[in-house]
Length: 461
Image (cartoon, rainbow, N blue to C red):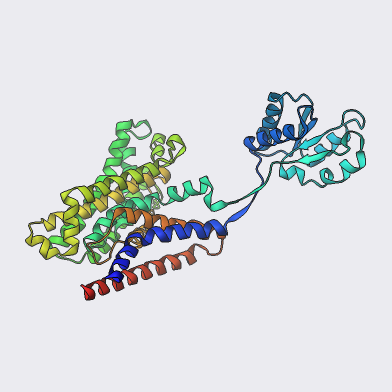
């Protein structure tokens, strides 16, 4: 009994523990020394000089040109001025110019208390020894001060964490619908191709039917709905064939995988051929969306956070509510747990399956229109996304046998994959092809563990 309870706890909280362990691992492995030169670092440096030497301090602010140099220098000057320091001067130039500037200063007069600078400039050899030792006079006992360095893992930088979430958003969106499909003991191999088809149809519809470059907001929404509708139709078709014709979902979705990809290539090629007035044979290139405003969907950053992250968390929250608070959610679990028992209990099994596959198509369509807003309608988009989505679902704890799983776990699974991808990339110990081996092994190990757990639970029941 205790072992059964431990297995259930491991199945429920294992993905979270794995995610935390991966964060700890890559955090420890990516720590490095940082030398700040932001305006905030400049303010702290100025405060330190005033605290150490008093408001009578004589400061010379130097910096080699760079993207952050001028704001850094200005922040020091402003903070010194705010604290009543009058003996401050600054100079920004390349190393030769800085040395010439120092050579041109008088050797007599008020002593320069400190040279305030960033690490790059402080590393110049003539600042560390020759000039200050040989000149004497104004530079007697002058110290070279820079902001304090610190260790911080690159993995935990806000920009990296944001990119981690942002880059995994499209796979995470597809994985929502895939979770429902796998809970019903099904599979959908077509989502990557459906995503590409939705992206191409969205781009073509906006350019051809909804105003092109002059498309209004409603026109852009209409184009997006076309892409989502295409995804829903592909998913519903998968569900209809799987249920009424009783064709295994593996075969049905494999066929849709090829059909949708082929249609995406045909539409993109035909559109390019028409755009060239039929004078040249077109290649299946991305269909550029003429309305620039549509790019906000994939590239917008409300309050500094990519819009795609809002979409992901909103979608997961909505799906979680549906699966835990509605009859439809209970039906999905019932169909996956025991299809015949669910039918005898009055659950509309066929309808549930059709809706589940249609929702999976909607997720692929939504991911497709986001992809189109970033790159245009790419007929080659979404390659291997179906495998990444399946990996996110099974790594997140959803049983491949059906009847068990949570969308919250899928989100954790998507984050686990994104963390591994980002961490291995930063460590530069594996290339993209080698990382595929890792992800494949991860899926296999997860499924094997799930099967062993199910067998044990069945024997001990």
